Amino acid sequence: MVATIADLFYKACEFDYPNALSHKKDGTYTPISHKELQARVERMVLAMQARGLRAGDAVALVSENRPEWAITDYACAIGGFPSVTIYPTLNAPQTGYILRNSESRWVVCSTPEQAKKVLEQWDNLPRLETLILMEGSLDPQGRNLITWDQVQAEGKAMEAHRPEVRQLARARKPTDLLTLIYTSGTTGDPKGAMLTHGNLISNILRCVEILPMLPGDSSLSFLPLSHIFERMAGHYTLFHIGATIAYAENMTTLAEDLRQVRPTILVSVPRIYEKIYANVRENVAASSIVKRFIFHWAMLAGRMAVPYLYEEKPIPPWIRFQLWWSRHLVFSKILARTGGRLRFAVSGGAPLAPMLMEFFWCIGLPIIEGYGLTETSPVLSFNRFGEVAPGKVGRPIYDEWKGRPFLKIAPDGEILAQGPCVMQGYWKNEKATAESFDPDGYFRTGDIGELDPQGRLKITDRKKELIITSGGKNLAPQPIEEALKTDKYITQAVLIGDQRNFVTALVVPNFSSLRRWAGYKKLHCNDDVDMVTKPEVYAKLMQRVERVNQQLSKFEQIKKISILDHEFTLESGQLTPSLKVKRRVINEMYAEQIEAMYR
Image (cartoon, rainbow, N blue to C red):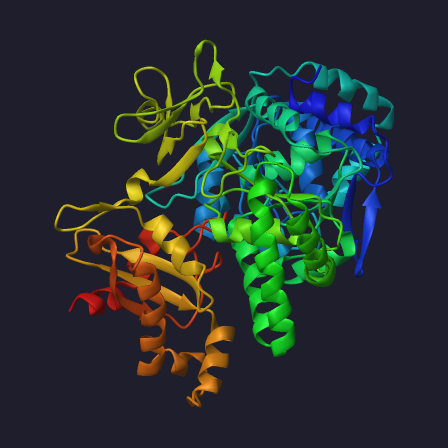
């Protein structure tokens, strides 16, 4: 029986495949077998114990996705060392805050660049004793710095004791603290959600029951493992079912990595699907009139078939015939760019626009959308095959738990949750923990939603992100932003209007489409920065915004826009690790442009 992540690790190793994990080396993916992976994990545990770590001591990870991340994480789970996952994109003070708050004794860093951030903060980290460096070399500056190879060598020297590690794994309990995952901290200092082995295991096993994952499946891991979505779905769950997990080199090589790995399952956030969709539209727009006609015919055939596909109903023969030809002539070429073997994809972390879902189902890549939070390990609901509804995130993963509804909607519309996947609280923060639960013990998600007659959940917005105009009107920005982003001339949008007398938006254009339009109009622009200042460009984008405005109530309509000459990025601190916009940061960084729209 699998009751802990330690159990999960050893059970998965019984698959004994030659390619449990895979990573890129000299341009080629190199596999690591289950047998070798087990050996490296057990050596890591032995070395950690020999150097004085004991159950309950926190170990932090500051690293991109790579096999060493997985090895460290499983070693921590077996040894009883709560892992503290830190995004490698955080700066030194942010990294230092989490290390200090979590009281980490060890920190494992991927590169000298990541380690330098820790060394810079070390004087303010009274509990930190040891830094492990996965690759490269660095002046330790008088600190206890050891290399990854050194740790593995120390563990290998104790090879005879490896069977004892299996006994150690059996000592772990579902109630043991597995990890501290810190929220992104968009409204103050980040809080460490305390998740146990049992929290994650309950989520993993339930998702495996619902989704058609198979031994021998493969996946490309590119979302940050520090984020609960990738960790639960792309790390633990896929490993548990016997899938091969390959690590992307980085986000810039994603297209090439997909072609090399040829995954069968894709786990991603909507932003990646948006980029794929935008790229397809760009290629179609640049093609000949005949190819454009064929593509639009194929999409029409796909749209006719999609309602039947969503509910797994028989497709009428004449539609099925057109769908077959459209996929054969057009869509197979799009899927070939992802490796050509994808069976289905999973989307989470942010809302997926219905138009995007329809597109991918049309081309033969079913996307299953889910919903959850860091504090709920994370999945609370998702669409099942046969009952997919675009714009909704499916039925809850449990109807009820211990005689009470698993999910319910509060009188003010907030989604509340209780069950085995809900966190134990926030680390060293009793006030925040108390505020996060209602008097009945339900976790307050902070999201506004509703359940349809079939029990499927629809998220309308974040409770704290609702815009309240100066006239007292409440509006949800996310659905409007999603509608804007489906326009071929707009890639990102953020609504503004809280305590204002009308709504405006910051808009990031799809520069490829805009440049083509500018060329067609013979509009001379020196570069993108120059282009967004042109009155003609403003008029063009405002015209596209008006298309969305026609679907909105008068108080929701966007009256003015400010066009930005660059995208919001994770590196600039404008996006969360799941690529959602940090509204507070955006409001601060673009205060001048915002105020200009209201003058």
